[in-house]
Image 1 (cartoon, rainbow, N blue to C red):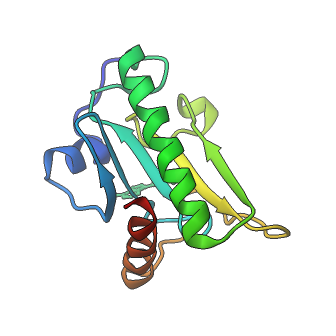
Image 2 (cartoon, rainbow, N blue to C red; image 1 turned 120 degrees about the vertical axis):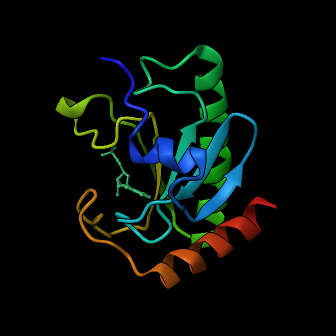
Length: 139
Ligand code: AMP
């Protein structure tokens, strides 16, 4: 299917929609998930127009996994959790809801259950506070 340039992540990349960013380089952007499955849930997206991982170039995939690893290390340190859940869905049949390739980095503390996927919007102050903690660990 052709890439839909009206999806919300494409709008964020063009500056037409806002996000609470934690990291950006020439090829990727990382920002807070608005409906986090756990506090500190971050999304990493390529700047390339690709609907999912299968459509992404090898260079784009390399850039994404580099940023995902870097963000995962920072989230683990910032939140002090034992586990980090990395997820990446391809296609609506697999549960993908935004048709621009992305990786989820979700802190997972021992014994906790993740909240439902894309269900409950977090307060902006909470997201901003989390972003500051994560950014401090990325420096
Ligand atoms: P997926 O279902 O894997 O496509 O995940 C899409 C993710 O994007 C979900 O976790 C949503 O909570 C999140 N999301 C949707 N819209 C926004 C937005 N404008 N800013 C940040 N996160 C978003």
